[in-house]
Length: 309
Image (tube, rainbow, N blue to C red; front, top):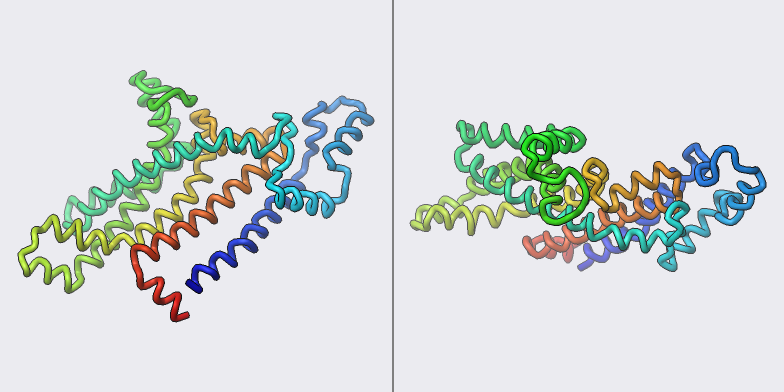
């Protein structure tokens, strides 16, 4: 209980630090959004008027406090380019990113669990080397290379799947494969390592000695007790999955928050970039809290250690 309260107490200053860093990085980056909106040859009076309307003529400290005040009222600002609230844009784009993230996690789990279990059951065999080689290949292939490769094979070569957009289930397959494949490589190696440690425990040997079926020993006892580090890595990678979606969504023109971030950067839309980066930061922090809660459910010893401390 105390451990959970400590983590919740650390959540607010961590989020404030992320907010501050995002604000400073965006506002200290060279470039004038007013010139991008009005053009390089616009009249100086028009530029000054627009800069005043947007509050960009104020000192950066005043802009920062105004930004924090807006966040306190769930106001992420007004997009320069879309001429609407950033919050409404994020709400509109969030379902696409969530859909892609869940599909990628599902693909990663479906690939990683069989590979990790197969590699752990026969360590240092040809089966183990093949599974580990596939996982290494998945980790080594970056999204900006794997995505175009899948497009060349399945969209252009086989003419079977859409190249871009979000127009049904078939449009989801390639971007989800791009994200899920790289994640599956990390997960399969963790499943193998954790399962190998568990298979060496005395209670596993005792279960075999009592004549319990092999599949039941692996699935009910060994695999269940190997999930703790796997869930931890899965939670960390799920948070990183959102940031990785920036590249993948851009490659496949997927209308999610990741692609929105790239568009905001290209248009020098300060509020939009701030809002999307804060969305990623908040999502990452919330995933970490969810992982802690899940670990406490899987392994009650974490609760006991929290009480003792």
